[in-house]
Amino acid sequence: MRDFDQMGLVVDWVDACRKGDLATLLDLYADDAELQCTCNGRHLYRGRRELETYWGPKLSAFSSAGFGLEEIHPAQNGIDLEYSVAGALRIRASFRFSAEGKIYSTLCEPAQQRPHDCGAC
Image (cartoon, rainbow, N blue to C red):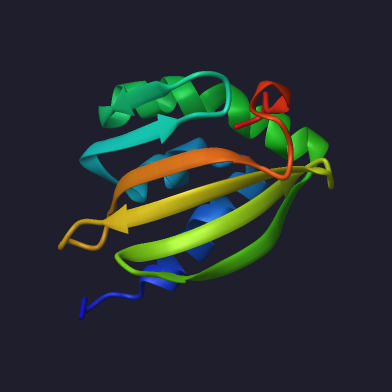
């Protein structure tokens, strides 16, 4: 069992997305974290610089369109989350964590729509 609150960390991630707070969002990730997005093809982002390149434009879209928490629950090795953008577009994200209490990996994929319709994750 980890000695940090994984669920709380993902809730902090949701809050940073809602506020469009890129600095706080990036601070939740480990320095060598990776994010794999399969919404529009398969893309892999590694490290703070690439995560910043990925998240910068997304957060602007989230804050103007609206970002909603749909489901959050523990998974076998982390936390699974489903969120919506603009009240309709749903994205599934799976988070895994480092021993230091940071997000080490994220996998995001479309939920309840065809992959080519997902442009916000």
